[in-house]
Image (cartoon, rainbow, N blue to C red):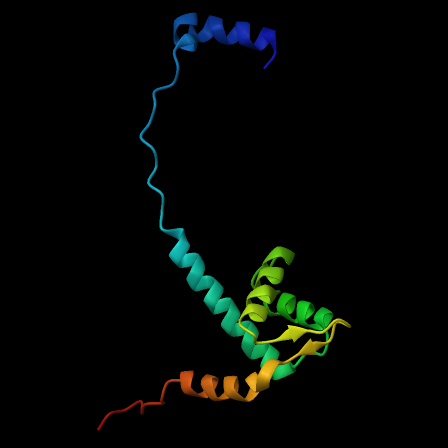
Length: 130
């Protein structure tokens, strides 16, 4: 704000009103975002795991591109989020990266995760009950 604009404001509003500080409002309640965020991360990890199991990328660049492509249609995902997802997958020993950048599927997790994915599917129920 320039000095001329301030002088014009003082003439319109009056100097007494400008000197008063705005009334303090009550602090806004902090929403419980952590639980929602944790649920979103679990959902992302689940979808990334299933895509990795299906496509079995061979090096870290392919894994990175795969994760980016999973979320391309829903507005994208930042590189830091991809790095976080990769670090979680490594900590869980879902996959690992060798020194040359190739993906190491640790300890036969692929077959056990396919069995878990089959268990997660709900049983189909008939549409019409007798």
